[in-house]
Image 1 (tube, rainbow, N blue to C red):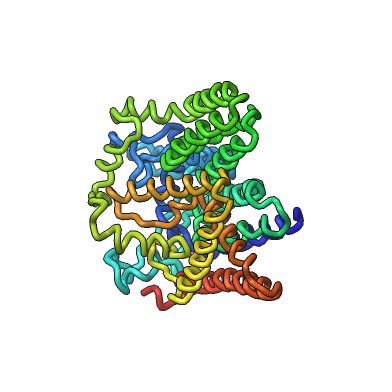
Image 2: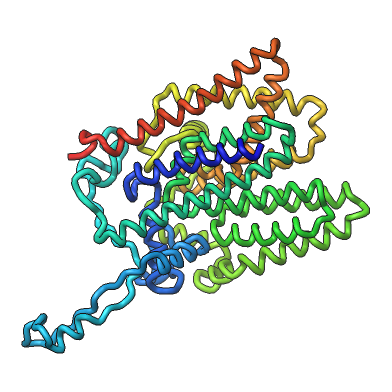
Length: 477
């Protein structure tokens, strides 16, 4: 089992590293804004204030700071560079050997930022259609890095994202064993995760999603552990820490709170002898989460007059605001279609698509898993609390995405990646229920083999599509 887990994790890391170098800088979604936030913190030693233009970060300055603080620390430690501070005396040549001017010019100040000078691809226009389906920047004929140090630091930040994603996958193995402790079935959810093209693409980008997803997986795992071991205090302490750090990374992890409360209520009702323990340590976990992550929300209230910064975000991103009703046609057409496509793989700024056959094939995999999951739930397993709460976490995350899209039209499947581990578990449980009904035994192996080969083929197709999109000369003028 350990060897198989290591091989799966190695496959994930190698394929993600391939995308780190294959995808040009600033082509993953919002990567420029995330990098500029890291630059701001590294250079100023403080967080942005979106109310003050000189202290704001366009695009992502509203985000919680943990990812950017760690990225800025990484910038400061990893090959810090220096910029000369030149001061010349008026009326005298600046650069005379041995002069005071030269000595002043040699004074240097630290520069912890990554300096890029991207050139816009004239073939790209932000309006959809053929002019949208090309890279945003020119990459074949221009070097956008000012120095080699800037290049090294940029890719170092991408490698940091790979590290968060790899730790996330490694932790998922423990979560999977809560649902599938027996043999090879515990590996199946991991295969659904590490072969998902969009998850691989985001894991190779400068983005706060990867750290947030790791902390969310930790929160999910420890929450579900409370169901089976309600008397273990370390689960509550660990959950409080993971939850606090998660909220300090991305606000979307608020979707976990109502389900965690329900888990505590369920555990207190089912485990009467330990009810006081559950309630006492449940209160402690929320206290820890508040102490760890609360300062960001207090800062929001002090600067913007609101705990979450929702109105500030609308005010500073007016071009993205598209308020709509839940009954709007958007939620019947655009939202579900694009949410699905971008969950499987719609790369870049949603402008790099896979062949239609790839989406159709993955839809069949999902359909089979969902059908099997219905069978699983209709049997005696309806009383399986872990599966029920896994479904609640998924539905809560989806509800959060819907609420977000009431204001912003961003039906992006990566917003479901905080619960990708649970989605993979549910898909596996469904397919296990289907395969258990197949006879003879060789039929099970054939279907399982076809699914695995299909997932691997999807990765191959994705790599080819991404390479051709960004490295074909016809994509640029």
